[in-house]
Amino acid sequence: MTDFEDALQAAGVEKLAEALTGRVEINPDQVRQDLARLVLTILEFLRRLMEMQAVRRVEANSLTDEQEENLGRTLMLAAAAIEDLSQQFGLRRDELNIELGPLGRLI
Image (cartoon, rainbow, N blue to C red; front, side, top):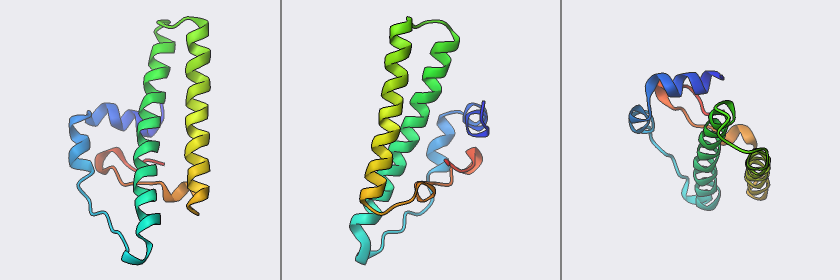
């Protein structure tokens, strides 16, 4: 498991709300890009949670080979879509980061 996964399990999902209470700064001159950064950061966070759940399901042998293949392909497509959208808004991957308090940084 990664540090992010370990911290997420240790802190529990209940702690996430506390971790996300930091300020979101939006510049009036860059509202579109700042909102895109916020939305894409949330999408990346959700993608990582789905990836963690997928790994658990694979390790538990609760999926067929076809389901594993579909899940892997879907997660890769989601990552590629987030990357494409990031590029459209001129954002680098490291800009899709957020401090998650006791969980550390997202990326």
